[in-house]
Image 1 (cartoon, rainbow, N blue to C red):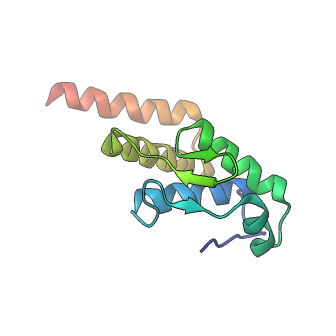
Image 2 (cartoon, one colour):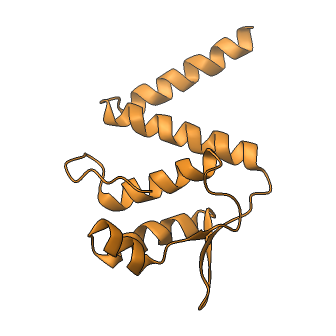
Length: 121
């Protein structure tokens, strides 16, 4: 299910986090679907369980997943799925542009230009 690029720019935990977000956005993972345990996913990928735990912790902090003691980790239900999905898409695109070398100032400039055009329409 998960593909990890050990030579990639993104850390392993970021790759796991981003893949889970994409799986949720694309409907591969649905609300209340159970995710593999940290230990099982780490064993499957041949990585340290703390790496998976870091990805899961960040996903839980941002409301993508939730943990039930002694039951496992599950995909959260979203009350405003479209807005959440659009926000995740915007964050993903901002990260792509950042990785392509765009500075924060350049991204802000682009956003200001887009909003300025919207006001003149």
